[in-house]
Image (cartoon, rainbow, N blue to C red):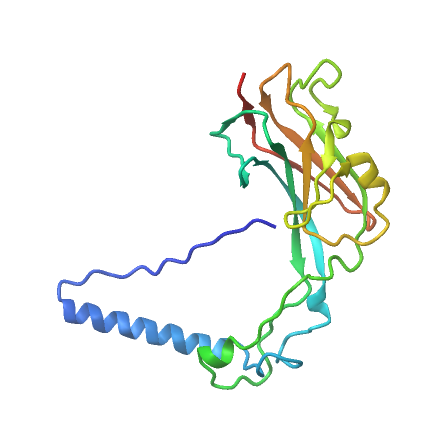
Length: 230
């Protein structure tokens, strides 16, 4: 799933510089002490870590899906609504499962006084074995604008797409062939679908994705519009 976050520490402005510095130091010390108490004390990288289920850490659970657009000419990049693009190189749909990891770090029953060095020794790679129970049953892409004479607004356009692998693994094939081959649990949180042609009737392109899973879950998402240059 795509998710960036920034943490900003806001400081009050005091007329006296010495008072200001003291308050900043007190605030930082308070934050460090809080981290030391709240995070679990962990053994060094290895087999055991308080509050972490390493077997569960291997899997994720799908909770939804997000829809984006990408281009890959000289390098991979996301297309934003302010971009007007030409149909060159690879242009396509970037689908990102909203995943929840089974591994949750819990505060142990008895916490030890541990600051940063101890707290951060618990490190895991969550979800590397994919979904534990979910298979992809069906994936439908709907154009929300007139694409061409055969694919007017609200038509399915699966036949205009090739499966182009995941974010870090290319494996190109038709989308129909890819869907017919989905017998195993979902392994990746991302799907790349490359457009075979550019829109002809409306230069604005916007789509809806509908995902059906073997667990009975159905998720939908709509992309933001992007524009193709005439």
